[in-house]
Length: 416
Image: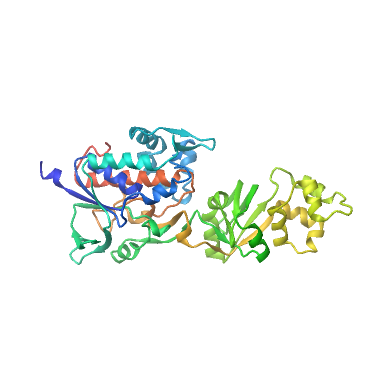
């Protein structure tokens, strides 16, 4: 074996981005050593797949790329390197079939993450990837070597190049704790503060509402919000009340805007349309209809089908007197203000925003401050909604970072 083939690459982080980087590099004959602090790789990947592993989304590429918001310009080139269709083909190559659900989301045929991960790890081991578990990265030594805490003591490694795929700071029990931030900052790598993404929010319900309706869903509703920068969000769907506020798919989709608005203004307002399939005129006419001796609650149930949590939330924002003012009540049914005071802690979030800024990296995801160091996955400064976007972009960044390593080492044919 030639000296070139003996070049050693360190990949730190055993999530989808790190595993994908290891696959691309090992396929080119490099000696790849993958280090992870946990006892096994892919732990967040497995947990995310418990309810059905959402691999990617089948919508047109233009729509898919738009989901990355302000970072679209940086993420889209990654998706051109390894996008939704390439990901599905890759999964099929592991012997796992996929299908498109009614929502357009793509899943493995059996909905499970474990068989896919097992097949992937088998391929990596066959390619010669060395997996080092319970190796927690500790930054660099004074001489520039990578430091690891291991079960047998501290280890120092000096590879030809390093790919960091350390995740963000959500679900720290699975290994993503953001401990890497100060080490990179100390070496001149610009890092945006980590923040919760795809997260819930605190409102501060009354004790009655919290006790009676925590865990209950708001179904067939719409939400809309905007921020001081002019960004707007409006969508139909559903979400769930919690003991302290709200969470769920509809809330997660708006979480970036809401989080940033709270950070800049101290709070954010999410407007809730309890009856999105009825016009304001229809709602007003129903509320104004004479109710006779019936209570307001009975009237709303009879005329509009409002009951349960939808009626209860009206009492959260309207006084007893306002509940008896038809015009005010009708207006609030179509635009009920929920004042959000804080995002839930980052460790509860599905993912995190912030991380290594793209401006601190070149087009191949190599640090301009630390040549030979590449970054990939959720530790990059981007965010996306759930629906397969997070996984696709993470894996795409692993591909691009690995190809960047190949270019740096003079391995042409990096597109293979």
